[in-house]
Picture 1 (cartoon, rainbow over the protein chains, first blue to last red):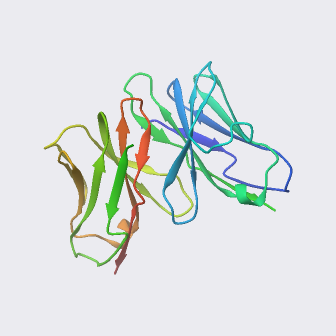
Picture 2: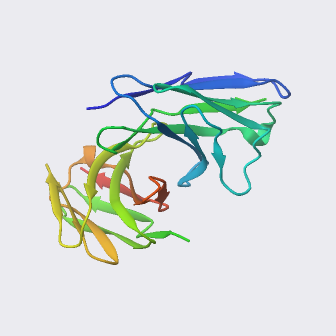
Length: 115
Length: 109
């Protein structure tokens, strides 16, 4: 099946620094990728929709200047958490939609801990 | 606004004790209903997609069904390795997924 890779899987950073998380579709092209956030024992909350070659669309309440999303190619989207604070600590998950079948596949997630 | 409600929140089963998980939904323009399995600290793992009422899909001990208002995930004779959180999500025509809160299933040997 289609594979979506996220990197890094775990990251610890100091408050005030920025962290970049990559989401790659390994064996298919994805014009659309989604970024989700998941707090412990809660479901996935959609943060933004990333479209290749255009600006991301953010969900209500998500700060676009804090969570920078770039979708530079059909296989890569990045999420940069800028000036991270402890409340940004969470599990971030990306998903990618195949251009051919419209199926959606998830990455393994990236756990961010901000000290 | 799309809404997905899963019940129960948690389910504790004895090995071999079959049960069902419920996912009720409201969505404008349903493109598909997805079931995922999520293990702690990992991303969701795809199980099924259902597209129209009356559709059923099976995979090993799992069977998913769909009506116009809800979906069921039946677990037949579960084993401890079926312990996980099962997530239901509806996909609208813009491909966005709206997730339910999940049902955490624990199967005791």
